[in-house]
Image (tube, rainbow, N blue to C red):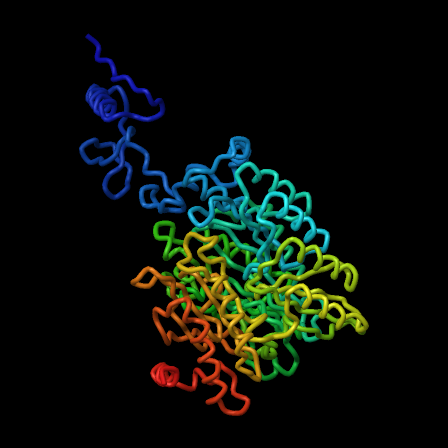
Length: 604
């Protein structure tokens, strides 16, 4: 009787019984000499001797992998991405909206590809995050967002530390309406969450900064649209940040990004003072330095790669670097999946830049930093107040928004101010503030007074526009404390008990190790923790900074109860005021002393 193969319910794969049957069948065929045998030995060489083979014609295919990582080794989010790309869930979005239903764990992750975050248990609703390249938004768009949050949100929006907007408390039935309304406004949320390139930021005064070397908005917008139109730039090993610095007087915190581009000027004098960079020749002009690997929540700033790039090379180089990260980043351990850790694995920049070069049709040029003029120091609080523009007779007005939160009425009024006194243009900043440019000399003071009457600030003051806070536990499941609430309480306390400082001090409240508020970069930083008695509290760090003050803050106190933070911060500021030398900044004062010395001063 002929032997029949076992049945299978899964065509296209073999069960163990089937494999045993086929192996026996082929052994018989080989023995009868009906077919020539070809197999592979242990060295990977082809062989015609069955006894020397470790795999034969019927060997099972090797395990499927993602950029070399076997499926079995992938982290859970990586498996979700492999099972279904987050860009391909439109039908699911519509179905969940029709059913007014929240997604399961896997689709909660995938929905973030469309800027939709189911934020339970903090809130049983969706948060929606936009992408606003270079922080540029029009008065028309801001009014449209105000109408949207009034209709289907909580009546307000938050400016984020990536110079864009977040809207909260949307029910499932509203998510498709929110996405389509945003698109009708000329905005998008695509790729603003999960393992994607976040909002592309730029110096917020680009185009009117009197000290800028070049307007970097075209490069931020160019990269933004390149990302939107190239599917392979989504689904990275982890999130990715890119920023452009114009070389002007305002910071965009570019040195905290995975990739940071800094405009520099090369002159005849700097070239004469610097050895030739190699076979390439340089001409005087505006170029960009490229720094990579910043992730301040992990206590690291971006570092100079040695590259000197022409403006036209910025977007191709950024895209090439992202693709290198996409292909080689760690997809097994989420804690080690940022670019910083790939660079560490490869022992620094050489291999990373070698892989980048392979993807480019033009040669990368390396040059020492001295071939260009040093960057001018930034104006630390130049995003707040009235400042002259490069255009004669015009000013920009920097407006501080307490912890970045605005209600719809304030948003509409800001849009009106931008129309009446400016040109309808608004710039959002990474400092959770905004700028209205192109205000004539005659109306700058009027606009500033109007902004103050709305509950905003137009001057740098420790109790006002210099306090930054992430979303906190009221809207984020990762946060260990109500950062925005505690930041507001601190601001109110300092307004009542003004320490009368000669200069403003930045205070950063962040809710978890993701460090969205970049606590390690603040003059005073606080990272939330749960105390042993269950209360909310903070670990306190001092002396961080960016740009010319670049440095990671040092921890001074652990486990300070949230309700004790306002008094502690007041004491820090009063102690600084009484013990600093003439003209000494807060950063200089803290770094002049050891941790022990500061602790003793503040404990006395």
